[in-house]
Amino acid sequence: MARDFSGSSWAVILGGSSGFGLATARKLAENGMNLCIVHRDRRGAMRRIEPEFEKLRGLGVGFHSWNADAVDPDRRTELLDEMQQAIGEDGRVRVLLHSIAFGNLKLLVPEKTTPRAAAGALADRLGIDPQKVQEAVRELFSEHDEDALFTVTDSPVYSQKNFLEESDFSRTILCMGTSLLGWTQGLHQRGLFADDARVFGLTSEGNTLAWKGYAAVSAAKVALEALARSIAVEFAPYGVRCNVIQAGVTEPPALQAIPGSDQLKANARLRNPFGRLTTPRDVANAIYLLSLDEAAWINGDVIRVDGGEHVSGAMR
Image (cartoon, rainbow, N blue to C red):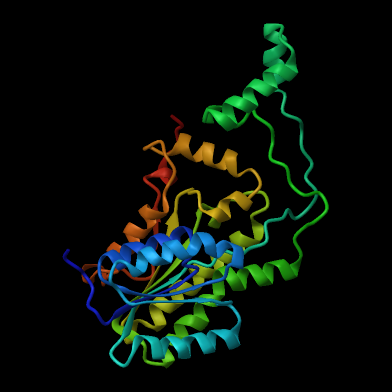
C-alpha cells in the first residue's frame, strides 16, 4: 500500500482514544504516519480502548500512548520529554491535533419554558387520548428515527439546580481551547516540529449559535479559533500551519452528554443535504488531506466539514 508520509513523521493526538481523535489516528496511520496518543480515561474504559490501539499497532507504524492529563502543565512537560525520547533523534511531528473533549454543560439560569402543545392539539382534533399520542410520538422519534417529530416529542431536560459559574468557564476554556498553546510551544521549543508542520483544533456550529447548556463550550471554541489564528501567523516563519476544523453535528461520546442531543441530531439530519450526520471518519479524511504537502498554503482558516449542513436553509 502506498504511503503518503515518511517513516520519520509523527502525529501527536491529544484526546485520541475515541471520536475524532481516534478516527484521525487510524486515517493517518493507514497512510504511514507514526502516532503519539495522549488520552485520559478510566481503567474500565480501557477494555474498549486497548483493542482499538492494538488495531493501530497492527498498521505497522510507530505507536506510543499515555493515559494522562494533557492539560496539567507539569504533566505536559513530562509527556513532551517522554515523546522526544520515544520518536528518536530523526523523528519529527508533522501533525498536532487537539481533540480534548472536557467541558461543563450547564445552563446559565433556571429554564423558563412553555409546555409543548402540538401533540395535545392533534389529539383533541382527532378525538384521541393525548397521552397515547405523546407516547406514540415519543416511540416514533426515539426508536424509529422519525426526525421530523423533534419539535413535537418531549422537550430536553436540564438540571434546575446546577448552573454555570465563572470557574466552569475557566476550566472549559483551558481544556477545550487554550491548552493547545502549551503543546504547540512545547513541541516548538524542543525542535520537534517538522519543517512543514500542521496544527489542528476542532470547533462546532456552537461557535456562533447559542445552544442551551453549551455556553462554556461555545466560549472555549471561540477562544480556540482566536488562538489558532495567532498560531497561524506567529509560527508561520517556523513552518507551522494551523487550521481549525468545524465538524457538522456528529455522534461522538461527548455529544451524548449534551441535553437535547437527540433533538440536535434530528435537526441536523433534516437540514443536511445528504440526510445524515457527520462521522468522525469524515473529519479524519479532511485532516489527512490538510496534512499533505499539497495543502501547505492553507493556514489560519476555519474549515467546515459537514456536507453542506451549514449552508442549508431548508429541511428535507
